[in-house]
Image 1 (cartoon, rainbow, N blue to C red):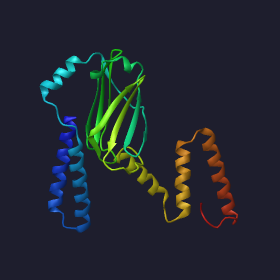
Image 2 (cartoon, one colour):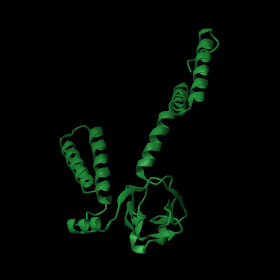
Image 3 (tube, rainbow, N blue to C red):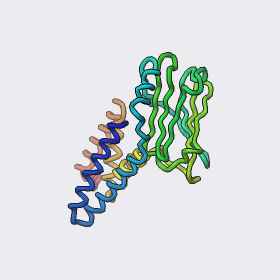
Image 4 (cartoon, rainbow, N blue to C red):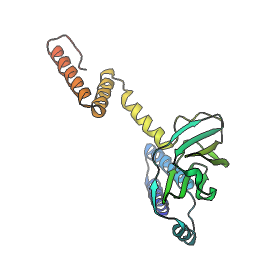
Length: 221
């Protein structure tokens, strides 16, 4: 985590230097937006723990650490809820299940569950959360992380990164040229499809080209 913060700080210093030397308004606007984004990321990084505390935690952890990638989530008006399945987690002492919250992040640490440790980190949450109002609950074979919304509004996804990814994908298909949008969709279907899907798309493509050459279709699809 300290390495990530250090890299972000280096990026920020470089952007500041570029901003100082930039003269074009559009370039300055882009750099200013990037500067603001980096400052927010640095602010939302969990605080660095003193070295002696880190060493003490390492010595108290048994086995090896597994990163949690599978989870489910939903939301109410007041909370975003993240569900993490871990067999037998309810048998652990409560202090072995720790969640640290910041305004735009949280990290989960489960210590010594069947000889393993489990971690999960979410940075750059889509919207701010209330640190004081957020909590975790331990249920049978499950941990429920409850992030208290600062504002009662709907979240379309969990993180800013997910939002940007969806926007980029949407932009790829929202083109002024309908045929170009169709081609993008077909390319995505081809890349993600199985062998049968690829054969179907290839056949449709060949047939459409043959019709075009015969003059049946005036527009290239």
